[in-house]
Length: 133
Image (tube, rainbow, N blue to C red):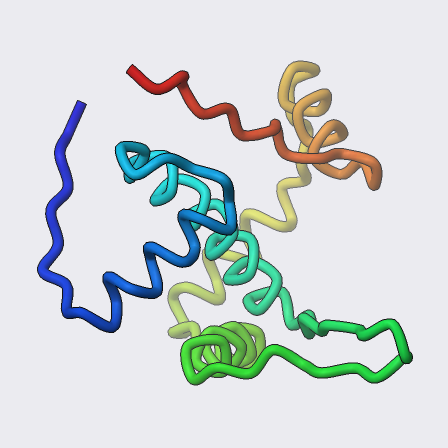
């Protein structure tokens, strides 16, 4: 198992200590804290990349969006990828035309894999963390 060390300051140490206590983890469970925070941060990043807004809703109905420069960079990068243009040379256009004119007849195993990927109810496998040693 790899080890991770980070140089932290007093403010970051205090914030991590508060998070650890909020999550009900013991002082010796720093790896578990890091795993939990990485899972949460990964989910937030994936939502931002997909263009979704993350909001907090109070009991009185007031909504506050999660705003952070990193999330804006992720959204901007995703939007640029979608809007990027594909530029092909004349030779590439001719090759693409030849391939498209040839038709597409994938083998049954590839058809099944593509059909599985296209299912609307398909979900990625759940994450499982190994038990703490």
